[in-house]
Length: 288
Image (tube, rainbow, N blue to C red):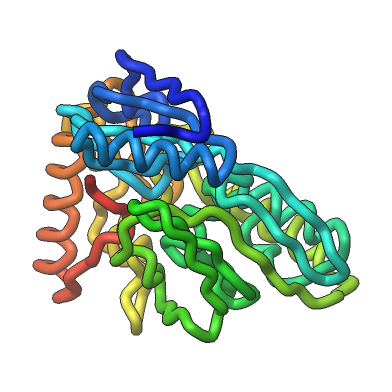
């Protein structure tokens, strides 16, 4: 097998290094990519070695297994950005929170909600991340996707079906390489962005290790956090995993929590909330 780049595969890395939870076991093969060509080479190497692939971004919204990953973990560092007039083209490894700040500073509206979300652009598209009434798909224009066979696909927004915390890329095998967004001029964008990040810092446990919101908000009625709090579960702890006292829809790693601790706490929350309210909470965090 010939590659366009030198394949620099590392051993002895841990998923916990790339997890906002600080949880996860050893990785058998690890590589960092900075271009689409390097991503294609990583897929070719994995195919040659019969290794499954795991794309890593900021490591939020995920719970990695204690036993680790026997395959090729690919850290996405494709982080370029090109500015247009009301449009931008950005690499999938670009910091999504930073993008929200930068666009708001230019008084462009549409991505203010991204400020404070610990994700890459690719991860935000993959999960259709959102908050404060906005979603990543709202101002998305195009997505360039590389499948595991090395073929590129350019998707127009009109070809893609998004819903709450869901994108079609969750059913595809490959990686998002880049995307373009179209934003609208709005003189209040910066003020809105600052208001959003100020509220998050006051209401969410940013100084603790977590994966963000654990459960999806039900379609009607109280939010997941409000339901958990109403059931008196704030502070509930199993092992090193604890329901945040600051925001009940966050589970934090207090000290050496394992994935098993977190999964046990998730199951306990679901059982108690369903028993007391009749609502079955669905996961937003992805358990790998």
